[in-house]
Every structure is written in C-alpha cells, then in structure tokens.
Image 1 (cartoon, one colour):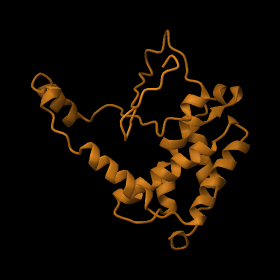
Image 2: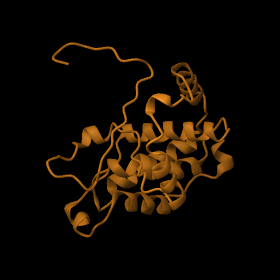
Image 3: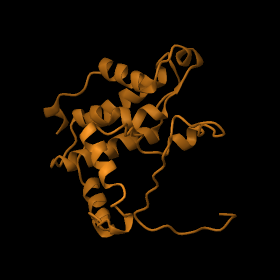
Length: 186
C-alpha cells in the first residue's frame, strides 16, 4: 500500500459479498479483478426449517463462541494434498477446449483466460480430494464449471439485451464439448 509491501499470512484468503439488490452507488469490478475470484457462489435463501432455526437462535449465537473446524496448519496441509491430486492430460485438454469455446462463442466478448483454466483445474483437484479420490474426473470439471467460470465471462451487449447469462453460456459449452471418458482421465 502506498509503495510499501505488507506480508500476508499463508494461506491467505479473501471472501467478498455482493448484494444484487442494492447496487446503487457501486460499480462493476473490472474484468481483471473478476478473473482473480476463484468462484462465485450464490447462497440464496434458506429453506423453511433452517430459516426458522435462524430466527430461533439469532439472539443466542455470538460469533465469539463459534469453535473453529480447522486451523491454519490444517488448511495448509489440505492445500498441499490438493496439489498432489492427479489430473490426466485429457482432462487438461478438456478444460482448454471449454475455454477456447467461450473465446469463440458469439455471445461472449471476453472468454475464459488461462487464469480461469488454472482456477477450474485447482478447484477440481480440491473437489476430487473431498470426494476421496487421488485423481480428477471430467465430471469434477462439469460440476465446478459454472461457479468457477460464469462470472469471468463478458457478454456482448446483444446477449445482455436478450438476458443471456454467463451460466447459460457455460452450460451450453459443456453440452457441446465432448468430455473424455472417465477411464481415460485416470
């Protein structure tokens, strides 16, 4: 900041929130910044049971009383384990085909960057590890493609007028690009 470097702890994580209703006075993030967010998740509203639970316990829960489920060393260990999850060349090639298809899509002004491809393969490694597998399957790519890729796509003005979305383009591209056979991806 102001020409002075400040060290951040490792691992380092930034979470940002966005309220799609109250956008007055705010500006869209530039493409280069959007591309640095690993995922964009939509939480939505809780179902009836959980919303009532929130109402009942709202005055009883104090953040200071929350117990951590993992410490920093545990997160660092998981990150090292994620890097050891194997990705077959065919899966890398599949991710690249997806990216190229977005770059050539008529509704997209700016398609997926190499950074997006790295994010998708990294996320797929974590997904595979969470599933107890030491390798990524094409299905892992499909499961994460929307949350990792849709927010990175810049639509053409015409696509915006037709209310096209990045998520819809990702779904269309996934439907058009043949995934490698799971056995070939191991």
